[in-house]
Amino acid sequence: MRGKKFKIAVVGILAAFGTAAMVYSGTASKRESAKSENVETAKAKPALTVTTTAPRTVAWPRSLTTNGNIVAWQEVVIGAEIGGLRLIEVLVNVGDKVKRGQLLARISSDTVDADLAQGRAAVAEEEAMLAEAVANGDRARQLQSTGLISAQQITQSLTAEQTAKARLAAAHARVQSNELRLSQTRVLAPDFGVISARTATVGSLAQPGQELFRLIRQNRLEWRAEVTATELPRIQTGQVVMVELADGVTTQGRVRIGAPTVDPQTRIGLVYVDLPADSPARAGTFARGVFELGQAPALTLPQSAVLLREGFSYVFKVDNNNQVAQTKVTTGRRVEDQVEITSGLEPNTRVVATGVGFLTDGDTVRVVDAQTVSVAPPPK
Image 1 (tube, rainbow, N blue to C red):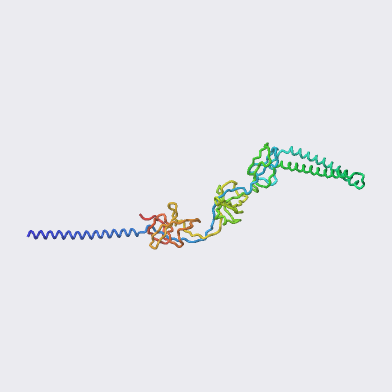
Image 2 (cartoon, rainbow, N blue to C red):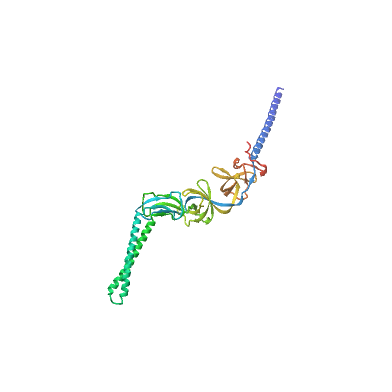
């Protein structure tokens, strides 16, 4: 009896243990299944609610921005034409506006005046000698047929007449030369404009060719834009250019001519842009300008769809499963809130329009209409 009772107890214990094992196994299986479902649910949960957009092709104004220096259209060097005489008066200074023919400085003319007076006296003397020679020549021609004077005397009289005429012409030439020298003691402006430099000093000794003043002719300035050889053919004579000066003021210029050659080292050519006479520009300053080159098609996206990360530009493509793929693109011009995409993206590609800063590559998003979404950070 005791053996039977012991066997029955052992069987009961084993049965109870098996039942508990089955219960535990079922509970563990349910837990694993629930955990798997939670993982799948977490994976499928959207990271962000977004709207999408696609790049579109629009006609954008094409422009070229470049740099250059502002210089005088023509800067005239005004110097002394006579040497060895002292400056006795300087009448203008840097910044003065002058007219054509205006007196800028005077050089001492005492020596020239004396030479001129001597020359005029020599002319009077030669005129008297010529009158005598002409009278002798006329007398010789009258007596030539009578034989009262020899042929030699006639020749001498006629030669003396010709010599007197030549001496008088030389005396007149010397007078003209002295009159020219006298005019050169007055330094005049060759054109109207503004004095840009002055080295003339009262009491200094003038020398031929010595610089006394510099004059910006007609007060005209120009901007010499540095343009690459590839862009140079696109710029046309008469084209309007907006030039931004060093102080931020913008003035309108017009292309006068483009250089026919480019620098073989830098491949840069110059474009000469005339600036208006009332422009506040100053010669020698730096300026930036924009050439309007007409219109050209551009593939554009809103600025909000482009993410700047680590120095590169990216957009997020959206596939049919609403998963995003971070795609590197190259950007170009910007007009208001639109950005030109020059490479890396095909037209009609669906991309995230806003909230790109909250996304990473491979995220799942929920796409809604633009009217029903407000960008918010992803849920935690």
